[in-house]
Length: 395
Image 1: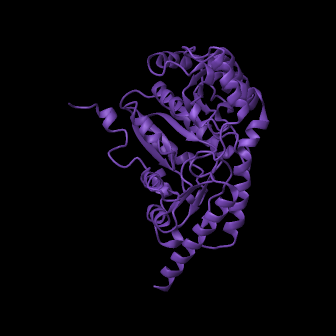
Image 2: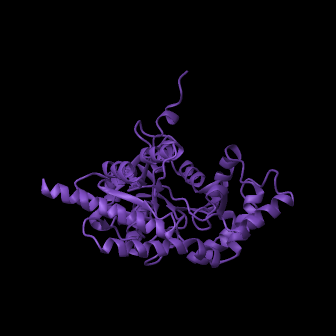
Image 3: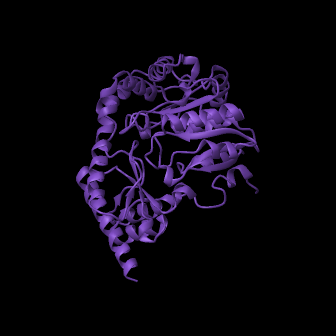
């Protein structure tokens, strides 16, 4: 039987970018000890106080159907959080609760792209972005950021790619690069969106993990509130990756239609999960700070380790739980280096090529193991790169 083109074309006919990760997991299943620096999964679990709130809600009966748009108290809390952080008036009518940030991305593209429309996204990108756009039968079109610009996108290049496009997806703080888009970058992007009449989909799931500079939501820029859909999540900010609790924030009309979409797809998020999310958000910054603290420490550790060598170059690590390392001095591309590192030292990292052409010759390192293990693995990685570069120079 024939399957739909929409489904069979989600990966674009190629790899989904997770080949090294899958090999590392197969090694682990076979009993090999692997240091996994691939997935953006916290090495700490969801805080017990959040789990207590989830358990209490479940035992109190919040195990049945929940409100499809999201429980009113959680929508109010998310709206207040967004309004406080951006200064933009926001109410529950601007908020849809979704099963995680990924479902929010899919919903946002359903709202902005008809079949055959062009959806723009910035390369390097999180691995699911092009497939999410193809999943709504739109055409996924990358716009490359450049290593020499610190992976800050150029407005002129977005503008040049925007003919026929209906949406632009950005992510700051950025996965995979760890870059925080500057105000100048975001103002340039907003200018293109206004000029080209584009929807801006802003993935802000790492907004609590900023190490340098500040996070600016483009929804707060002039004349952007009615053309911006913000994607948020409890996953990264509160180590609730498995709970699947996220949101889309946008204009009331768009959210009303997205509620209809949710009715016919996800049918809401479990009430006990929403209750835990509402509790966590209302606890204030201490929980977010506790989740972010290990990554702030490990970034500082990484800077110390990398300063002691001259082969690998660190892309400005301004936010999120990742480091992007330029490994081109080894003479290898990111994929070859990642496989060699995994085979030789049982350390798993993600090739830059998993995140697009712009990140070729780089690797992404997730700061997601304990401090001592992370520092040791990074030192081994640097020594390995140094040996490869030395051998290459001697040839």
